[in-house]
Length: 128
Length: 349
Ligand SMILES: [Zn+2]
Figure 1 (cartoon, protein in one colour):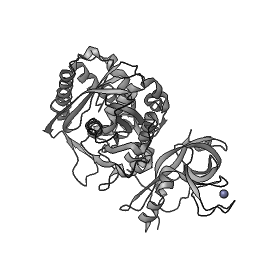
Figure 2 (cartoon, protein in one colour):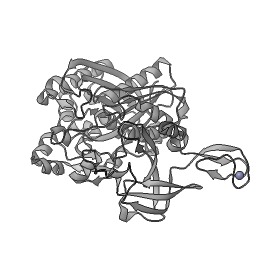
Figure 3 (cartoon, rainbow over the protein chains, first blue to last red):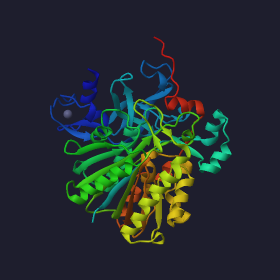
Figure 4 (cartoon, rainbow over the protein chains, first blue to last red):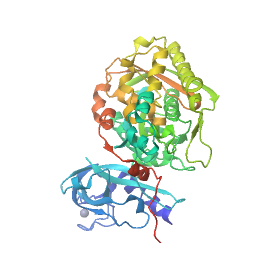
């Protein structure tokens, strides 16, 4: 069920909680069961920094269903601390986007499950 | 003594100018600008709503308060544009700032007064000793029907305040509430746009209730208008707060810092609370602040605050209100209509 899946991801999507390996210190977002570097199974919860930089980006002009009204929009791989993640970059001008550009995390609506389903919230980036 | 320990403001980056709206409907922009003292208004992005703006404002408030969010005992969000008809906005916001599960949560509604209600009850719970910290938020992404006078003003923004007993940045010295049944503005269930009783929204509604609460507040505090450095009022347009300030004996100089509406528009539940954030951004220790909200239906809540030494340490810990207001991206009417969900792309199945 869509609502249950979204609910399980709340700590990661709302608060950017990641897992930090208690042995080697590697940070995973989302967290995982076994560290791929040292095979340790214990992680502490850490929060990702709310500022980072763009590693690469593209502009989506032919969007998947459910995102028709949003196109065109930018999507990027962003580095926040030790973690790289895929996210929308919003409130930006496409011709001013650049690799290395500074961004800041904001809380936004990610998706709505149709006209009557739940509203899904989470993180996106805006130019810093 | 009880008071505000942290505050935060959020204003979306997009704006539309009065001229751009007037052009589409054949209206006379200069007369709107003169008559209502409005120049432009904020517009939320398609992925912004009361919940997202409240989270941003609340995060800045937590940062300024410098507290563990787990100690927040209540969260009250006042709005007339809560994203869900049934399901509280506060649940999402509480989860996002990390103050669940030991927290009392409710959404408030009273047209544009809902934000100050959340503040009032948060302060009351702190004063009663029921919670250590209380969070009250006023936020709206209100819409006016296309071509209606409201379309020139209805805008978006959020302000959040954390109340507590220790380390306050402003004490609450007096409060007042003034309320009667006055049908000046309303929206029935399942209606998308609100309706208003045009000129009836003035004298018997906005002015009577704002002056009513304002006079109670002066009496309660034993203070005179000239004792205050700043005053802020509900601001549905540029003219009303200046006029009601004058009626109560305040000068334009006292009102100006919190008078955001010419550039921001009417943020409904966020209006006077955002005015207060703009004042706190520049206030000095010892400054007295006078605030009266107004919500159609109708009622007003008022507060008298005294700013403390701690203000200097927190002002720079979050984005300032006027800085957010002065950073803007302008939209044409077509993009604005798309952003506000007035038009949609055809879905090809
Ligand atoms: Zn490891």
